[in-house]
Image 1: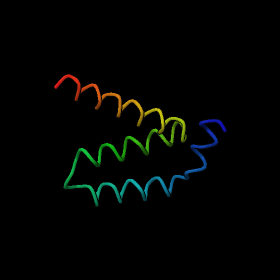
Image 2: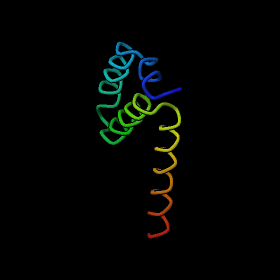
Image 3: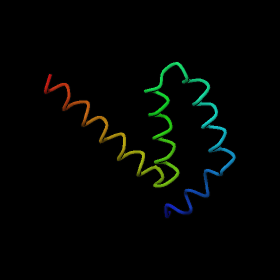
Image 4: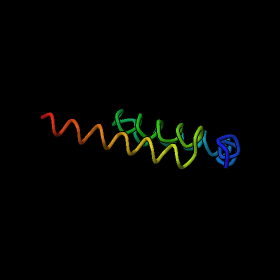
Length: 69
C-alpha cells in the first residue's frame, strides 16, 4: 500500500478528531502530546511502516542515552 493510499485511509475528519483529543487530553504533558502528534503525522505520511521505524529510532536514541549516562 502506498503512502498516498494510507494517507487517504485515515481520513481528514479522523485526523482532526485525533489532533483535538491529543491537544485536550495531553495538554498537561507537552512531551507526550508532541510524541502523539509526531506518531499521527508519521502514520499519515508513511503508514504503519513509518510509525514502526519512528518508534524503533526513538527506542535506539533512548537506549543510547542510557548507555551514555
